[in-house]
Picture 1 (cartoon, rainbow, N blue to C red):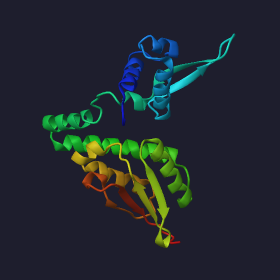
Picture 2: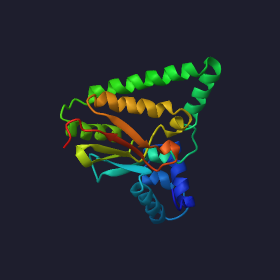
Picture 3: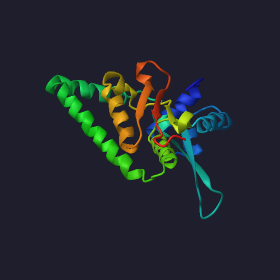
Picture 4: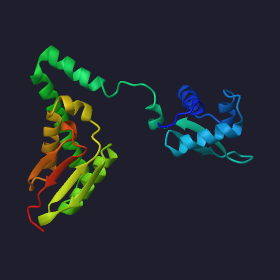
Length: 211
């Protein structure tokens, strides 16, 4: 978060320790004016680090409480990016690379089963659009463009599993298998990878019927 002022950091810390606080409860931790605290709190809400919720009362006006969003929680140190890689490295050391391959294949099969269950469209255009929607809901940042010959270029600007894929390229191979499973009549190819230093992953889904 840019320009994290002492007041903003204190607000994040207070809300990390206790949730659903009113402004009155928050002000117990400050000696500066309530106006100044509200300004910083409003900016945190606008930036997506804090969420506010309105509560109705039988008498009087509704009141607001404040809590951290997931984005707010992620401003604190964590190991969620490194632990999965370390666990796979431990598995490889204990049981060999074949154990890691088997585990990632198992994960890939689960991914394919999930996508086949949620994507029910038969029309290729609608199926591609549904795939993009589902992937974006799962933390990817996917855009798609229909290019020459009616093919589709899929661009993914954020890979939630990039930390693992950089160490185990099988994740990228499994992703290609996933697309081939979703689009069984189409040739699927990849030609850009975030894990290899590109700023975006690019996939082409060939339209078997041309335009």
